[in-house]
Amino acid sequence: MDFLSRKKIKLLLLGVILSGAALRIYHIGFSLPYVTHPDEGRYLPTAISMLSRLDFNPKYFENPPFLSYIYAFVTFLYFIIWKISSLFLKLPNFKVLWEDDPTTFYIMARTINVIFGVGTCLVAYHIAKKMFNDTIGVISCALLSFCFLHVRDSHYAVNDVPSVFFMLLAFKYIVDVWAGGGTKSYILAGIMSGIAVATKYNVGIIVIPFLAAYLFKQYYKEGEGRRRFYIFFIFCLIGFYIGCPWIILDAKMFFKGFLTTLSYSRQPWLGCSAESSYIQFLKTLLWGYGVMPCLFLALGSLVLARKKQAFLLLMIFPFMYYILLGASKLFFVRFAIPLIPFLCITSAYGIAHSSDYFSKFLKNRVIIFLTLIAILQGFIFSIRHDYLIGKTDTRIIARNWIRKNIPPGSKIMTEGYCPNLKDFAKDGSVKSYNFKEVWRDLPKKNIQDYISEGYEFIVTSDFVRKRYTADKEKYPIESSFYSTLDVDAEKIFSSDICDKKIPFYFDEIYSPFWNLFILEKPGPCINIYKITGF
Image (tube, rainbow, N blue to C red; front, top):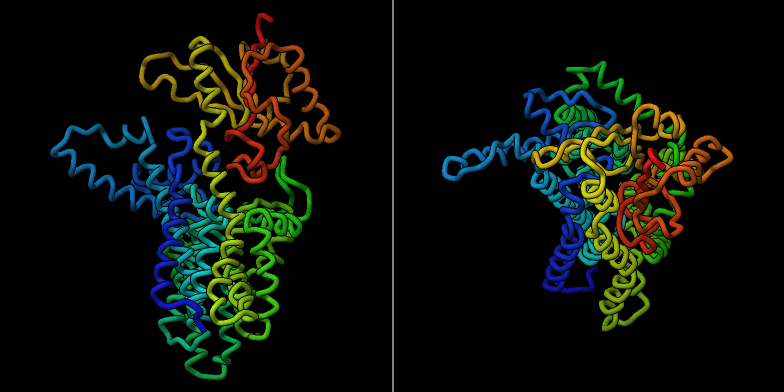
């Protein structure tokens, strides 16, 4: 039963969606034209590359290519508009525009992800409405709209949020199957499931809710039901082929990339926590989803368990996803994003039914009050995150300092997550720096080796350094290198965050998460050392 009128439902839904969109679009141009999120250099550049060579084989399948195809399609439309406009206006060459300043392209790509993020909130509303009622639908939408982890990752031009949109859309049609939908529901559920997997592999677990819905209704006992079962999986394959035709056209390269992705789960990456992924999932949910939403999740699960089919249909995906991915030794907080929409709906059910103990006059007020309590943490965290990414990244500060203070042509050695020195010479105003990036292998040589090779400066980043120094017993040589650098070389620049003892968490390399209220600006501690003439 709905506790709010239709008119109020529509107004609340509109307000929630607009607020969620504002949180996701705010500072959408962070760090540009420099890309500081390490994964953003994968999808959009792949799309531009495919368009420029008119070859739509991405030649990389550790992540599936469908998001790059979306970016390629939107970029192509932008190109058409650009060409038409150039007939009337004097505009620069389109390729030069991308190479000189990719800001417009990244804002387009990030905006697409904002649309996917907001779209996911709307789909969550429709699922909850279909399974329960409008009120629970709006609460679900609100919880997802203000969920910090979802807001945070909706800012990036990467595949986590888009894949969850397609996955949840598939679940919407799976709910239709459960509710007695016809062949169309099976087809749409199958296509969306395939497209979701073609956006990110790990959401393939969505087929398990379909199997549950199918078994609950015992469609296997009907001739038509058995036929529709095969239709679902046929259209799953069709959907995946639409998003990734290279599973057939370039099967060798596809399976090489896919198997490489599977191999990543065998051990944590350098700097990742060695703690059990099962524990890290729970910690991520408390921080990225919220303490109060988790409490309402527990309550909602207890109450919803009375409706066995609805409860199992809603919770079987997060349960199986948690069991399977929790067994992986590699964990990133973004791995928890596919869980969030299902948890939001269950938490919303708990919030709605918490009002059962109040009079009819108080029910809607209690629901609104509890919803506000539930979204408060996510709202505060999201505002803080948006504020931080709007600050100038430490790598950009260091880059500007290098341009002003280090002579052009100097030979510089950098490690990963350091300032981008590639494009200093594009405008012709300065000569290019002679630099080399060794990612995380800087400590494999000593200072004298770099001096003998002609290097004058070394630039380090805490996003690499702390991976070693956090465990000096395991990495004594690497830790010793950085200590020696501090003592024997002349430190000529240090970003001001270096003065604070900020703990290192691997997920901070993407954007502030765990250190949200410690950091004053995004990015690592950058140190620049002069190693000659000291």
